[in-house]
Figure 1 (cartoon, rainbow, N blue to C red):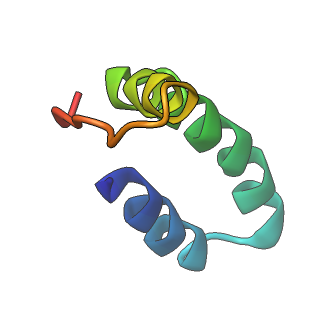
Figure 2: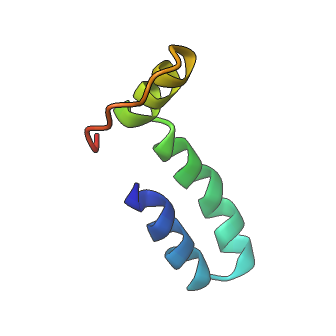
Length: 54
């Protein structure tokens, strides 16, 4: 997932206070994806996830 890498790069460019406000938004956006839901289902079903970059 490129979102985590993008968030880390963005955080390096901003002051700490701004980064601390940015982090929960980035986290929430990552958990709103279809891939995240597939990952949790696959984990519960003890199988490999089938990611679709969505």
